[in-house]
Every structure is written in C-alpha cells, then in structure tokens.
Amino acid sequence: MTLHDELLASNARYATEFSAGALRIRPLRQIAILTCMDSRYTAQGVLGLSLGDSHVIRNAGGRASDDAIRSLVLSSTALGTRWCVVIHHTDCGLLGVTNDELRARVEAATGVRPDIDFLPFEDAAASVMEDVAALRACPYFPPDYEVLGFVYDVTSGLLRDPRALGRNRL
Ligand code: ZN
Image 1 (cartoon, protein in one colour):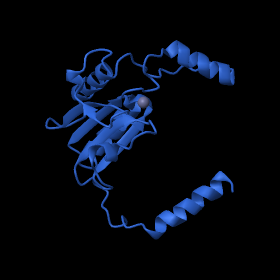
Image 2 (cartoon, protein in one colour):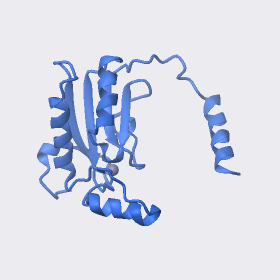
Image 3 (cartoon, protein in one colour):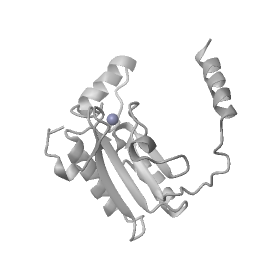
Image 4 (cartoon, rainbow, N blue to C red):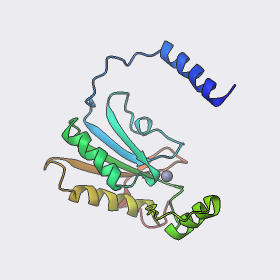
C-alpha cells in the first residue's frame, strides 16, 4: 500500500468515529498555543485541552517568528483568543546548533546554501522567555492579552516554569 492509500484508509476510519463537526471556529478556551513541531507530544495533550479549545501554532522550536506572530495576531483579533501559551522543550533539534551548521547541512543535501535564520538557541528556558518577552512587546495584541511560557520535558511529560530553570539544568 502506498502512503497515499494508507493515509486515505486511515482517514476513512477516522471519519467513521468523527464527532467534532458541530464545533465553532472560535476556540472555546480562548487559548492559542505556540510550540515546536516535535513529534513526541501534542500541545493539547500536554495541557489537557480538547479539540475546539485552542489554536495551535507549531514551527521548528516554537519560536515567535514573523509567521507565528501573523497567526497569533489573527487568532486574537479575528477569533477571540486572550491567552498565548508558548512551549519550548528539552532535547529540541534547534538546541545547541548554529545557523552556520544548519545552512551547511542544507547545502550538503541540496547544493544550495539557504539564506534562512533557523532561530536556533542555546537554552530552552532562555529561548522561551525571550519569545514570551517578544510577544508581550508586540503592539498588535490588545492590552489585556496575556502570554505564558513553559518548558516541556520530553522525558517526564512535565511542564516546567522557565524562570525556575537555570541555564543547562535541563
Ligand atoms: Zn523542538
């Protein structure tokens, strides 16, 4: 079976048990989550949220990139979210690497050196606090918009307060 056929067969099974068709577009809990694309967790699972409760914006590292901010601003302004939860995590692929190393890997694989800032970082607690600060300073959210930050430990399943974590303690 090709991947294409396998995915369609899986979706057909999914649809037989599907019951979320009546959910509204505005997230019920008014929460938007910004987190990494890592395959070892789901944002809703980590926070105990259900379908329909929150938006989830995922990218490499869970960084507050221009495109993440684009989504979060629309999430807030158009769809009523009032909280943003930023979650970075231990053992992230962007942890402890440099843009030069990442660009060299792309160049080795493709022959083209990309002009991309991959937004790598040295410390998950520091990076999540940096992104929380960037979002709090963003002028495109209303005054009562709140931004929280956590570090998710992929080995224990626990969220940690980044303010309580020193450099390299994870
Ligand atoms: Zn990651």
